[in-house]
Image (cartoon, rainbow, N blue to C red; front, side, top):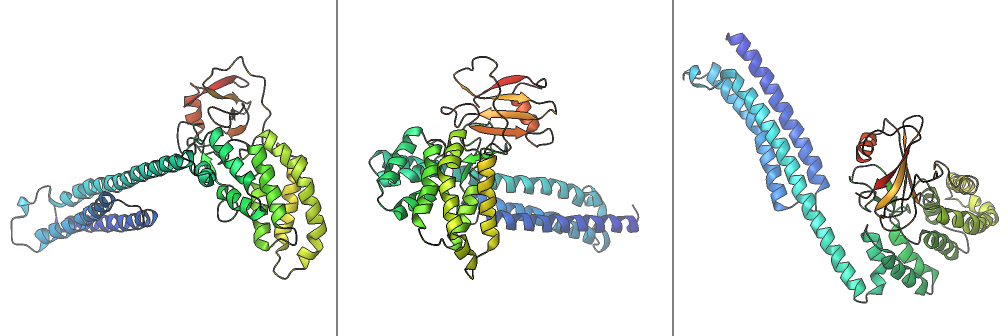
Length: 377
């Protein structure tokens, strides 16, 4: 091989080595940020190994270049010649990737064990009499039972002040006011964590919860609500829909028993609210729009449950149908052991990433209009 060709090959390998090093550096930076407080020592060691592996091809390329052009030692003694850095680049790149993935998997499994241990400890406390932690258990355990929710409900109802009830109710919302959610797999309604759909953390007593949540919001704001209160209300209304996992009874109760009172309150307060200097008119308009949608289209985006194709087995969690476009309609229970078909509605079009997974789970392609019961994962 001529010196020119060898030089070009080494420059290409050098560029690839730099690219591998830079890519690994940024990947590790994002990984370390994601696992900043939870990375295990083994995870950190594997990340260090990945960085060393990323540096190695670059060092090897420089060494091969030195042997080829600057050293007096025999070039023939270098195994694979200028191909050595390329082989090292591929091998080290693969090993670095596996090292990073392995580290994240180690920490994820460690975190899962910690979360499970914490949930078990919390459950032991609640069942041992710590009723003030009953709602913490429901908010932390995706498999919380109807009995767990009953304890939470009883504790909330025992609070005499609206503010004390609100403290417990907001354990089921995030910092902005949106209702927290679980993935379908976490509650046992799908085989895989990444199958898209999420459902509210509240899996039992949804009708009571929604009514109590909004009634408590009203009780806390007898005068003019703050901008923060209105922002929380807007986000809560936005996620209180059938399509996002609330059952029909809960949404109907919200629509008929709560929203009229809420709407009347806003009607009375709106002129004064709009006159406030820090008021964002968009929030008020968004609340109005969401109330109107819930009142006029409570089932927006949700297909009605068709007649069942027979008697479901005890372990079936729902029923599926393929429509004329090939999309899948899924009507699921609230949880594997409670609720009725249709409490959770999922629609997956043929272009959705988990469409083929659902088809495979159902046992293959369905004919348009065909219904099939969905077994528990």
